[in-house]
Amino acid sequence: MYLAKFLGFPKISQTLGLSDGVFGFLLILVALAMFWVAEWAEKKFPREAY
Image (tube, rainbow, N blue to C red; front, side, top):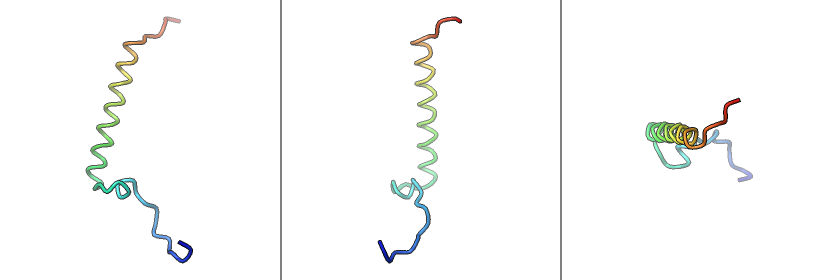
């Protein structure tokens, strides 16, 4: 490590061993799932009117 050169900043897709396209697709799927969970939580736990 002491004599190693800087090889650039590693990308998450490289660290996980995925191609950039597959990683992007998985990221989109996770984002859509998070929006769906947020909508579900808003319906299940409604806010009281101000």
